[in-house]
Image (cartoon, rainbow, N blue to C red):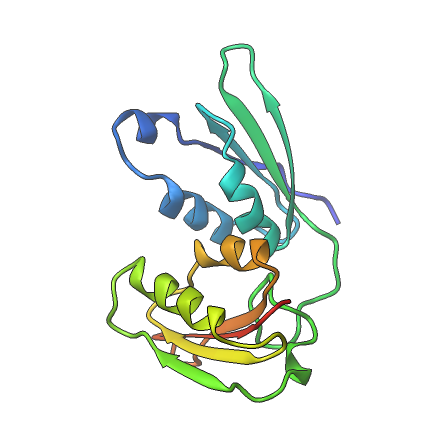
Length: 172
């Protein structure tokens, strides 16, 4: 199988206009062919994006360009397929977790309120306990924070595609 050439995305024009490029980056990721890498150019090293992409199954390599911009290549990892129906980055053993001890319906809330409520709820839960949350969208900015705090998660969209279901197992 021939690996397709990386998809190039330069977000410098968007940032120069004062626009947030995260949605464009995620759209580019969603448009990648199987095995295709994303080559991103930004005016700064986009370190927070590294965890987001790692949770989606990508390795990254970066280098500073002569003009001071950064080129980051996100390459899909050759890993085993994720558990059936779970999003990339999901904990592989999530099917064996205990039933959730707490549930949050966060539909209709604007960011960052769902993230704030989830993180607050996790503070009061013992290690190993599971939280279930129902959201309007995939909480991409939450994933790096969960990883940083030592929690595991598994999530996917409901079959109708209108809600995102998230389970989080508390870390130590």
